[in-house]
Figure (tube, rainbow, N blue to C red):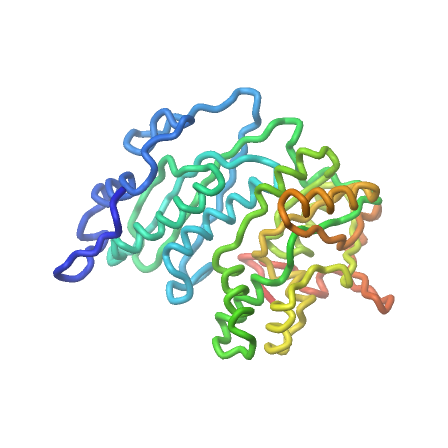
Length: 355
């Protein structure tokens, strides 16, 4: 496998210097050359893949656009590669599935250094390798001013383990893995470099924002129990993603604010920023945890199982209601508010976005 491009003399080569096909050649040599399920990878018109016929095929895609999702000053190319792989794997995790093959389409300014692209692919390759997937193809094109990465991920799942948003039932408990709000707190650390929090908390929150860890093993384990009725990943914020589950299931929901799993680091950052950690947990987005609904008698069983097998916590954060019009957040003082009072979550075409 080639190392990063770093010429001894002269400026670093750009994608304009080596051209489209030179860049594709570099990318092909950077990625794994073989996989038992890849019949033909990069180098032909299409990738040829082998898949068990009894499984369902899963397909998802997401993009990262410079100046919309990231700034080059705030994230390294390797971190960006890890990030875009992770957020797509998170979608597969929410279905109880297994990621397999990725296609990457990049639109690049011609002045982009080749070393930047190589490091980007190194991040994608490294992240996908941890979860058993590989890049098998893609495309490159020129952009006049900014970088865009469109990432397509395929996966598979046994029909008896497939989990959808549409299975929630009135009376179900609502559970969430891990912590909520950390990514939004990490974003605040980028926005306010002098935010008065400890260095360890800052690094933790920045890591959670830049390189999220999808709950793949957790999703597969939960799907294997047969106890989960509905599941989604928390990409747009808990309130928004639980709303998606309710819309698909024809139900309402109540979130219990006192049960929200908020880390001490997140609380410290919110306090320093003069913000509300509960609001960040509800609508900050990009935590890539899993939100799921289960019958009440299955809560203790799943908590113990997940903690034992993965070390990941599972918190009770609400309940599914029969009335689809009831989407509310309940507080320990007896008051309640509708979801929109705490932000609608991330929406590319509705402002303000992350709160």
